[in-house]
Length: 275
Image (cartoon, rainbow, N blue to C red; front, side, top):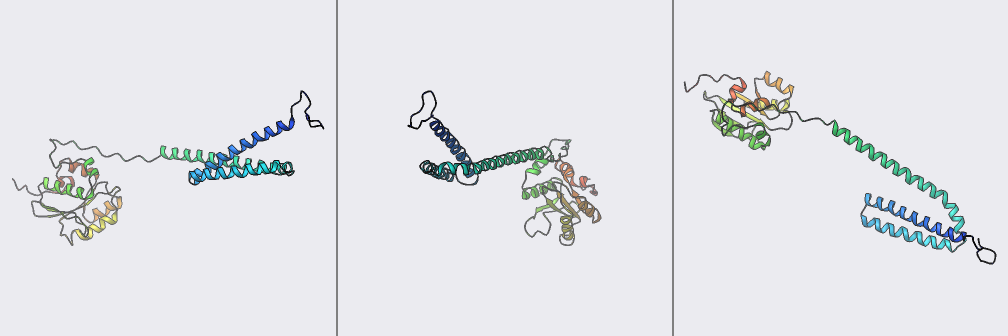
């Protein structure tokens, strides 16, 4: 305690010195906390250099304000006035952090739930077991899936050639009017293939467009649509009505494994020319 003559009484601490030390530590702690908050906000919404500049500027303003208040009589009243505002600020910062933490936990939980309930990829049908050693032009579903659309068309052409079709040619390009591969069987019938390497089942609209050009434009006697991932139910119903032949994923696997296209589609081959 300090007496009227300015001397401290023996055995008692200097309360003003203790108050100054406590206020200094509180100010330093508040400055560090404010710096962490400002840096975090700047790193989240701006450049790290902006965080450093903001921190330095804020620290300089606070130090200047503290030095000015210590030398004026306005210091204690102003501290008493700012105390409620500081309490509100701390409460607001705490609420913000609590809300941010709760939101982050909810988002992480939602992402984990979405991942746990994600739809599984449909299982591919088992590869048919060929009754002979595979030939050069036999393909698996993995090979069809890995192929690009032009390569997929070429693979279908090669399978036709393997099955004994003649005049096989790939014509798929811009303006092909729905025909990707043309060929003739040994009875001279025109076979027209449209090859769809889609990631999803082929829709009825695509089959309808092919039906509009296969016979009138290309003169198809055997119009065939080959789809890597099958057809929708409306597309299959329309193809049945219009006598179009569809090669879905299961049939494509059998065709690629060595079975003749006409056997896959249950088309009568006619008399064997070699007999």
